[in-house]
Length: 118
Image (cartoon, rainbow, N blue to C red; front, side, top):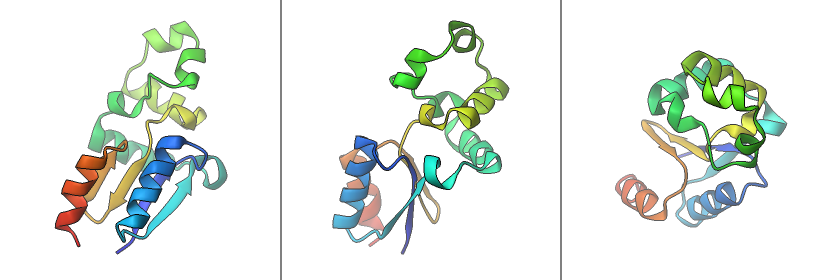
């Protein structure tokens, strides 16, 4: 079974998720937004699945550096435009395996979900 991991290869949280997935035989393949690009249709699907508010990483340096007017006027339409322009603003990793979709890395959540799918 293949697990797709969307994020940025030098992100510590993505590294932790990849390591955990490898150690637990989930065969992760990284899709790096910077190197591999970001598809707007895919992002729309992720926003539908997780909610656009959850995709925006408000703890990131990218968020802190955003113009205040953009921060205060985000809605579903503007958020997706900003995320396409600034993919480092997307919370990561996004992990997809068949019908499983996870946002972020939580070891206990991964253990509970992937233990069922071995």
